[in-house]
Length: 159
Image (tube, rainbow, N blue to C red; front, top):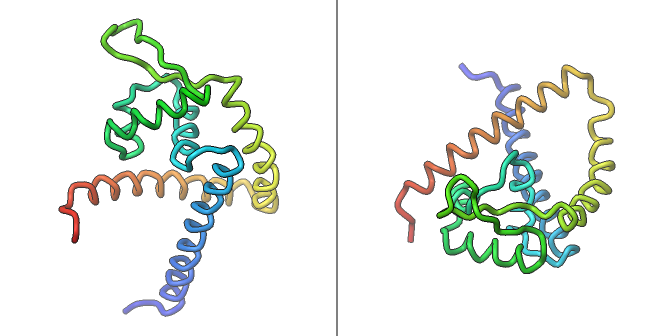
């Protein structure tokens, strides 16, 4: 037997999740428009700067779900804008690494930092335990998203 209160909470959570995701996509578009970048470029920069080491174009493709050709074009755009540099891999000369250019990425970071202070106020009234729950949820949602993305990409495309 299902619990009607829990069912109602799941339904509310599903609705709010859809709104949250749509709002984030639209927010990302606004940030990209403000910076004169493509939304995918903004997210790629976010992912690149979250990694401890430079990435190859193949790794960027894998991380974003783009083809290697599309990832190459993305890196080309970011390189033209001065946001990344291609550097030879010292350990494997056949590979080229994509490295964020800190001075140029600071332009993006400044926008995020300014907006981030306002976003952080959303969490000010949460206890440390609640912040841990939110963080755990975000990690689990991120992991599940990656699993679901792989699952979707393995399925035949629908007409």
